[in-house]
Length: 158
Image 1 (cartoon, rainbow, N blue to C red):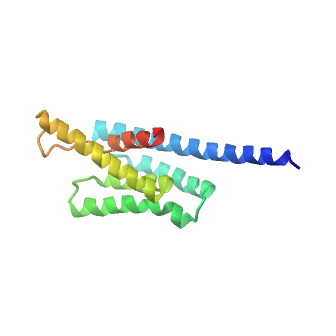
Image 2 (cartoon, rainbow, N blue to C red):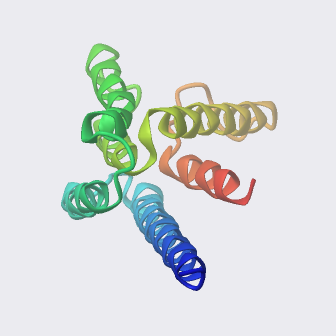
Image 3 (cartoon, one colour):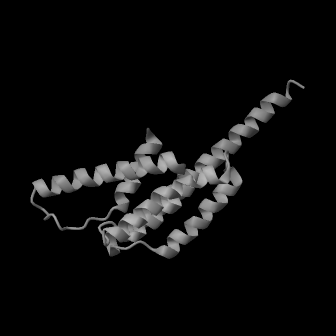
């Protein structure tokens, strides 16, 4: 009977490792690909976001530790960005909001909020630096998704 416990613990550890690996790889692929299109084309592919929405929903159904409603509460952050995008007439893109809805499926409310706030801070600091160097004017649009990617990488490393 005592040999059963180490196997059970090993099985639980393998499940947690698989869950974390799927989450990290999915998030980095999603944010990496969307960063590329945001920089190159100044747009975010909704078809790509839709694919990862399916991945996020599958992730929730397989690995949810809390109720689906609690786990998926992270979409609130993306929905708020979508509302702000409409109110502000596009000062932040709708694609960014849809992207944050999908990241919210995998990250939950707390981590998705940290992701957004961190990215806003990085984008603000970067914009301020560019303004100081007189490389851009105040009306220049910059791609936002790369800042989401860098923030997420920081969250993973720290």
